[in-house]
Length: 363
Image (cartoon, rainbow, N blue to C red; front, side):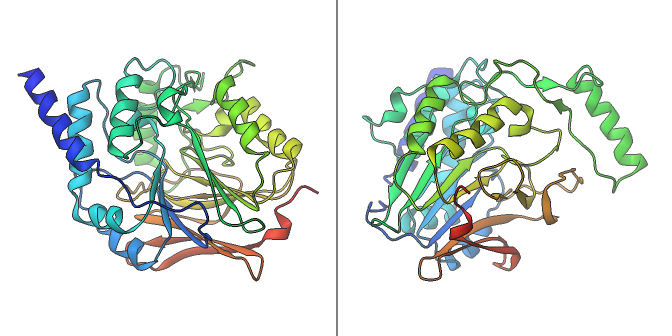
C-alpha cells in the first residue's frame, strides 16, 4: 500500500510540475513580487491581488508547502495539492516563478544539516518547480541559485540562498533549557500579558564554526556578489537584519551575519536588498551602522499564515503587519529609485519605502 501511495503521489506531482513561464535574460525588470508561508490545504485568495499587481516575476521564499514529513509520498501529495489550487495555477500560467525553501518544505520544523531526508526533499522540490534535470541545483550541496536579468547598466541579480542544507543545529536559549520548557512559559505569558512583545526560544550560537550556509555555498555567494549588477535581490528564507526576535534568523549565527556584510563590502556589490519570509507577519527592517551602506530587509509572510503575537525587533521601521501579505519590489530606472512595499489580500498597500539606488553603494 505504501508503494502504491508513493507512486500515485509522484504521478500527481509530475502532473503538477509543468514547466513554468520563462523569463528571458534580457528582460528589463521593474516589478518583482514575492512571498512565503502558504499552506496547501487552505484557501489562497491572495493570488488575485498578486496578479493585479502585474509582477514580471514571483519569488517563493520558503514554506511554500507545509510538508513536515519524512515520507516522500506525503511530500509529493502536498506539492500536488498546491499545484491544483486555482489561484496558484493561474499565477504559474502567467508569471515566471522562482523558489527556494524553508524548514517546512525542507521537511521538518526548524531543521538544518541534521535532517536525514533532504535528498528526497530536494528531488520533490526540483520536480515540482520544473527544474531541468541538468540544473546545477541537482548537484550542489543545497538548492541555492542565482540569475541576472536586464541589459548592462540596468541589471537585476536574483540570488536565492539555501539556509537549511548545511545549517548548524540551532541553539535553544539556556534560560529555557528545552524548546518544550519555552512553550510552557510562552503559553503562560500569553495569558498574563497578551499584547507584550514575546521573544522566541532561540539564542545566538556561540560556536565560531556555526554556519547558516556552509563553505561551498559561501564561496559561491562571494563569487555571485562580484558579478556585474546594479540591483541585487537576495532571497533569504529567514530574516537577515532583525535584532533580536528569538526565533530563527541570521542573528542566531552572528559570525555568518557579519561575514555576509563583509562579503558585500569586499566585493563592492551595489544595490543589495534582502527579501525574507518565515515570520507569519510582514515588516521592514533597516540597518545603517557597521554595514557597507544602509541595508534593507523586506519581510513578507505569510501568503496564508498570520501570527498575532508581538515579536521584538529593534530595527523594525514602522509596524509589523499581521495579515496575509505579499511583497513587491519596483525599480524606477529613470528616477534611479527602488520602492519596497507590502500589500494585503485585497491589494491595499500596508507599507512603502522608496530608496535612491545611489545610496545602495559602498561608501
